[in-house]
Length: 241
Image (tube, rainbow, N blue to C red; front, side, top):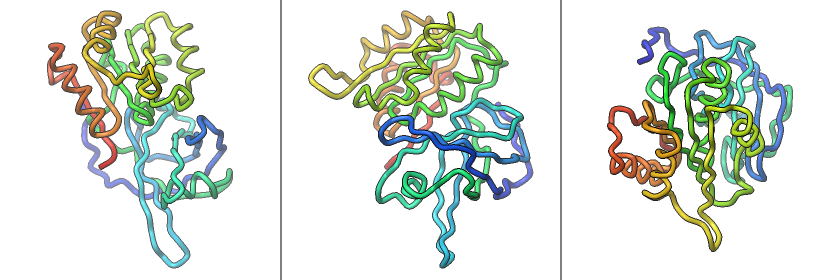
């Protein structure tokens, strides 16, 4: 477990270094920020925007980059036209802009190299983002830890960092990815057979990380329990109503 840090998290100034499209709706933002404590793969940050009249809007976003000492963090932000924060990042934000950021936050949905594996990572849609941080950190610090990502999306075109995941599956002997598409005539939701196939390929996971919508995570967690996994080995992160 992560030891609690007694110091309150300060709001920091973060500058946008660059922006690049990831899918039709998601953009990657690299920000430069000087955290006052080390980051751990799986954590998130709070972003706060302040309007000229003083109105503030705040949202939480998972960190996609592996922990590092270079002062750069990467976020994947999905644009929503009516979103107070996501709308700004989708249509207004530019490199050089400075925003307020607080983090890194979170002590339960995290992975460190000493935690070991095998790792079963299950993500739905943008819920893959903190899992990317875990995979990227694993590749740098503990590449011999077996890991499998089961990634579910509505359409293959919505796959976040599809090329990077394919490259990792090709080049990293102890990592594999299973992409599941739910939309279209051949689409399927994650079910017992898919979970069984993932476990047959990976073996018994020491840790399972599930992230996505409430409904997605609840269904996936139930399937893992039905497959006989110890509840103590399952960690979840949820978003949405």
